[in-house]
Length: 152
Image (cartoon, rainbow, N blue to C red; front, top):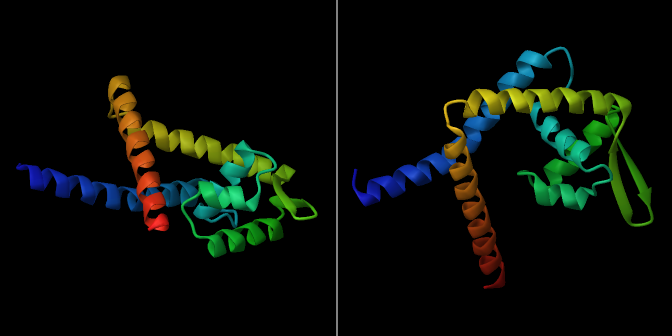
């Protein structure tokens, strides 16, 4: 495989992998949460809110791979489902899980851990460390590219 083919393969994998991860997560949600009204994207929001109690919607927007309007819609859905409440004072809004939301958070953690185990069990510990370092570098690089594009 020549250098151009390796570059094309890397780009193809970087672009296609998130879709496959979403499909895996949807499959786990369908399997383990089929009797609930929980949609797979809700799990990501519940997971982030559960990890950082009091997270603002703006902070949530910075952390998850969805646009602002979609996140706003999902947050309202989660509030309507009784999984999240918004403790607002003035212009400050902070999102918290309800007791039912914490139950879903616990289930989502188990699902993410199961997905993590099943997905990464093909890698050695050393390969996992190398992959994490590569992903951090790519993440930092993408941040710098986005920053330069917004300046220019």
